[in-house]
Length: 150
Picture 1 (cartoon, rainbow, N blue to C red):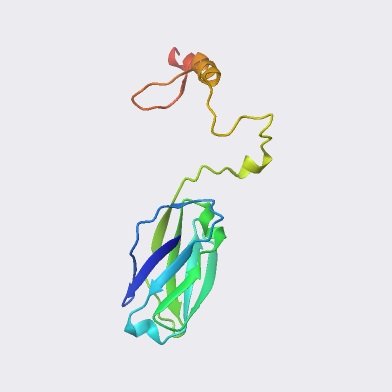
Picture 2 (cartoon, one colour):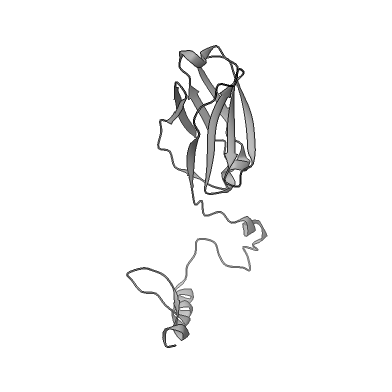
């Protein structure tokens, strides 16, 4: 999957609308289309994770450049990306929203034979859940029955 950007003077503009899941271990690439002002400069991409950690990827010289997005920035709800060049020419930062992936850090610890079956919701599970919770149709949030009568 690719995230596409272009630079117009100092403004970094995202060109695609790809939805990127967080906790993603696939290869996500950022492509950059530079204008004439940037073309002959040695360039770097700066990725900033949601918790502020910074990662730099070398882009080199030329108009159209590409680099891999560091996996570390894919662990939150968004990451920032900007570019800079050898003479300290810098771009604006573009924030990339990350979508929930369904992955849990604890998923590797699941015993799929004996624990909850992934992607399986049984009628028995729904019945047991409904004994302790009320699930209103309008907002789909669970409410403990005991708290409704206090």
